[in-house]
Length: 125
Image 1: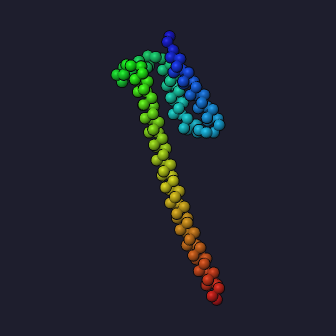
Image 2 (image 1 turned 90 degrees about the vertical axis):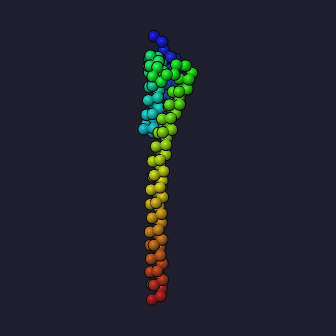
Image 3 (image 1 turned 30 degrees about the horizontal axis):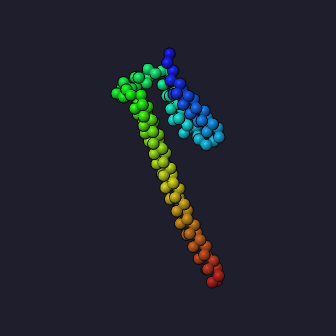
């Protein structure tokens, strides 16, 4: 049985780095799932080169270097899509928080104005 040691080593090293990053609280588990799926995919390709050949046949890319480049582009595509989704969610949260702050500041100005008017009214009596 042929095993692609390069894919296996890259998958194992990536998995170890993910675990270290999660343990040091630099990455949430929710965000690491994508990378864990990637390491599992690399491991599958390492132990089952037929899977690689099958995907090469489906995509029509038979050159190994081009196929590897193709896989990296696909991976990067999904990674960018995921980051764009997260970025959009954060932009919505920032907009909502900014609006809440603006409303709070406006209400605070109204309260301050009322307090000043009451103080001036009390001084005039």
